[in-house]
Length: 214
Image (cartoon, rainbow, N blue to C red; front, side):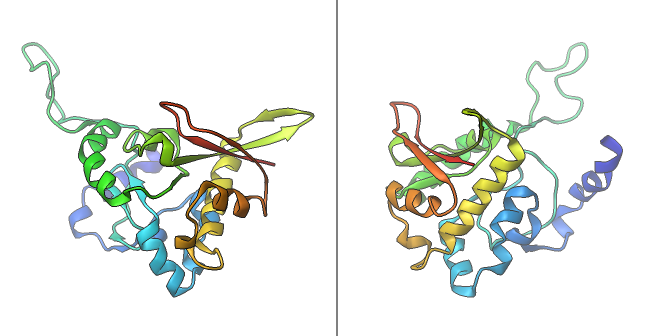
């Protein structure tokens, strides 16, 4: 594993001079493949630049159309300055951002609260990226995916990522555009075109839940 990622690690040292491309071309993986943003028509892609936030260990958050370099940095890591906080007599606390989820939470909470306002937030993120920002539970709809066989449900990470990406694609391709999706009922109606759906209401500390069941 380590040897395979070393070329990407080396690229991280040249980010300031690296070529850039729209974020939807840089980010890859099951969710982004299902989203397939490159096939959006120009109006929908422009709409997505205002409606979709992509959380990033390096940048905190980007839009799908922001120009960024290729990089490798997970939100789940802890960063510190090499050599600090180690060995006899070293400082007990090293410098650096520390846990990226906590670092970005402190930096993003206020500006994203202002940006999001009272809009519905359809949350398709994995758990490590959820740490970076949480809108209020009442306005957040967390998307889950379950496979059901013989009455038993389970989550399969690969399929869950695919389902979230596909739902995001369906919302962006809604007949009147993503801005027409205003309520939880709107999201559930669109999702029901592909999955059996169940809704669970928000609690004091937990968001609304949309379960997509295969």
